[in-house]
Image (cartoon, rainbow, N blue to C red):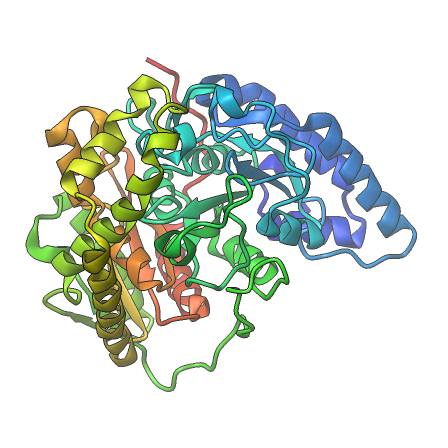
Length: 473
């Protein structure tokens, strides 16, 4: 390993160096803690720093390796954890003062899986209040996270703390969740890579209290990793996938599927739903499409994705009907300034009655069928993450016009979440000093195809981060 600072290294390089004894886990954690001390006052991505605990875990890893134990592939690799995922012994605050003492009794399943591979949590990461106060990561307890590329742009969300931390070198891996773009959007806005896995691919536990979530909240949200390289995303995916007795939804599907014969058939949709795509984002799609075509794949532009308007209608109807039942309990917990986003969401997608809800569940299956038929004809779908450049902070909560503009730009992410397919988001280009994101959507449980396609794109674009954070204005 050369003299490049350890905090600039990939997760794969760090894990290999610890496993071989070339570097100690302690010095890797120390390097990242120093980087956090340097840049977090500007970015404000890491909320609850676990410095002493991380150093103790690293020392334990070093002792195990010295005793001859073979360590996992992510040994000594630091990672951040979104404020709504449990780290044993640490409050899971969801960004709210009401939950500042809500200490997790055990690790959430994805945290436990990364730990089992040797990774070390260095802290929680910022998000909007209860992931309901908007998309931009601004919370009651921890304030606002900035985009390290440009402090006047949002880092995206709701897993924006992880995106900003990874992009600025505070950790090579972040762990967030995505129910409509919340991993993919920070990847796009921060110039990193993010994986939204297939529904049921990773074990999860999203309970807030003793009750399990309702149907749409069981089947749409997924946890997912962020990284700077696709290779690191692949390592995290291998660690996170698999069954777990805590989650009966998790499927026993191999991480790698069969290699498709011949050139892959890759569909390209530049403007999902025909509602407009900014030229900067379209340029990123072009770069990605050219990279895939130059690699020998059959890239074909198609008119549109299946039944997008209906996907958005069903997505909003299912989620907001379920959410409306709990709103009287949730509303008093949220600060006043965080209620506007939900109010606009409920106005846009009015709750339906039982008959209407049951009809939505039937339409949901039909939509999934239509998308699966598309992915049976193509190995990958290439499209934008967000059809505009990285947004200004708080656009989605600025009023009805800003809310509609933001929702419209994020439309494809919501549809992909509804139908449960995997997707990798990554920058396709840098235009006017800002990363512009694309996503590669794959067939069910074929994250490996998404990752392989994303690697081809990243070879063309290069790895854009870590970056030195831009000062706050």
